[in-house]
Length: 570
Image 1 (spheres, rainbow, N blue to C red):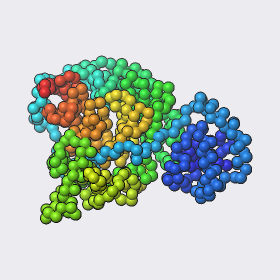
Image 2: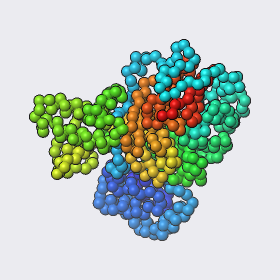
Image 3: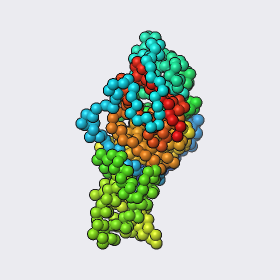
Image 4: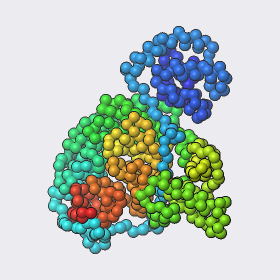
């Protein structure tokens, strides 16, 4: 009887190969898993895995269950058969093993932490809205109101369209519960309007809608039903893809794994997406993401770290640090946005050498150093009370029980940051936001812990951002990356350059157009150019139902009225 680690058992439990049962062992430590078996996957690697198990048996590793003495001869007689089976299995089925993120091999970019909440929410701050006029321009520095009128009866979308999404060709109205009487026999319905707000097409669907994926960067849509079926549609509202995720071997493997599960499939699949032209599809199951092609074959799979979790991530501060204080923090370090993390660390290094009390006997040095630490904390999320500064001759990233700041002086001066922590509670860091970039090959995965991983076309993680709070929207337009949490919007350029941040102190949803982006609240719309400069704000007396974006024009629609705003040329 062969015993395998949870890594292999996770995917092969309850299976028999050449009459050899595979049994899951729970006692392996993470170090042993990583060092000996985590790299093995697929039937073609089973031989190597078994050889390693036999070697551990000889070495007497206590966490490996003893192998029967007759196994060696039995296995030797089955070797040729097993090798032949490997070849056949490769042709008949695909092995579904996700890549485990190695945090020691990818850049880590801590951004100013996103607060869990704002005090204004607790105080019940009134909603931003128009008190008298149907539409009111609050800030007209970059646009003007050119039209305001009541909608005709045929222009008013049905109240059953509860969800409206911006796409590259207009807006998509979604009736997810099948309340549209026009399609009484259908379980849901869609209506597409162009950039001017005119109806293009309306269809009824034979499935309900539980998850929704649309993008302002293309005109393709993905939906998942409450039963776990994935559907995709093109801009003509024609179905181009269908896949029963409940029967997908990757999903089945997850439910047969050693990872605790509960509830139905729809509870575990948090995000879905479709690329331009419907070539590739994305879905996540708990802490794992899969990218598949039209033939349901895996392009790649990737899992967030388990157990020890994000060991290179410090205990992030949770205080409410508004944008004004972050701007001041940049000034304290003689910087301003846009700025990269390298620039922040480099400037901190320079000022720390200058003002650290052990190196500077000025009576104001201690106070100045505290301000520098506080500024660095606001910009990176590192608690200044935990900083330890010392001189060293060698530095690299490594795991430690606590984190420190190491100042290195070898001829010139360099500064590195060693950061580590242990995640407590449930070990899975679920993926709550995801999406294809504008290039349609890179993918972003945002976790509950506030980590956003950028993945290349082969499923290899390129870098990880840390915003300390669960992301809701991640949109990469090629020129800019927008990351929105419930309390903050980050604007990033060239992967690492923080251009600006916007505090979100009311419930606001990010929408992105060709030449800028907006934050839509219940009764207001704030509009900005691509790098975050304010164009203007419009408030409404009634809740906003839809927004249409076209070149140099933004159309805002309530249940009864429509306003058109023209954006000035820069």
